[in-house]
Length: 350
Image (cartoon, rainbow, N blue to C red):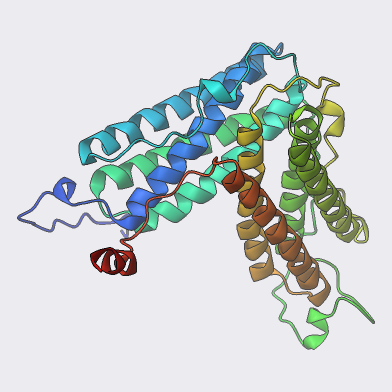
């Protein structure tokens, strides 16, 4: 009897150990990015643990911090073996553990889901590109542990009533095919209802953006530099308009949407994090939104929704550029590993 889903092992002999291979640009780049991101998360989660009352939430925040420490340690081991400089990332200088509470406990769970999805994106893209066994196994470990963490987060969110369930739609009783180009309409005439994939990505984008908006509100309250505060306010305005547009699409189809989370930010104006960390965080997460919108566009079938996502992409790209310029201006943007600059080498010989 055929064993469905079974993959027969392949044994290919090689005179050279895979571990002797130099790191490829993909392996080096993804390890570097994972180190930077997890060093930032480590600072944030250590602060969360100083201000948490709910025992279930405390456990899941501690689990997330344990994963950060595990991932950072493994990357450091690989870099040490390769003689690669360890990135600075984020350190004790970027967190004030004595700062008052800035978020309610519930926010931590939404935040962890928001960042875990971003981590899944990094690790998921990395795995098919990894050739060296130790690096490939590391990213498989990362994605498996992050999936387990997301399971805990979703259980807490659902059982504690922190989320609105993704809408239920009728189960199709027969297979249908699109009959004409009206399927693509969105602006005029008879506009068809949203299909399942459009609903999925609208819900996901609202869920991500409501967490992002609350975080921007908090960062705007506590940032030290006026320029940083204006940056976060601009991000909050962009995000609020996006949420409004995405919610309208669901509500026009009599479907529920995730709720805003701004009420989970306290009145504190004392910064638990450095301006460097907060600006980088939003540049990084807004960059992730670009990929999320690309995924949304790929499965979308209505012109009005496609144009809506393209508008969001334009606004977000400009916002990311503003944040990157601020990081560069203050000497806070760490240089990723790059290729050899051949032209510069030639000029130096003259």
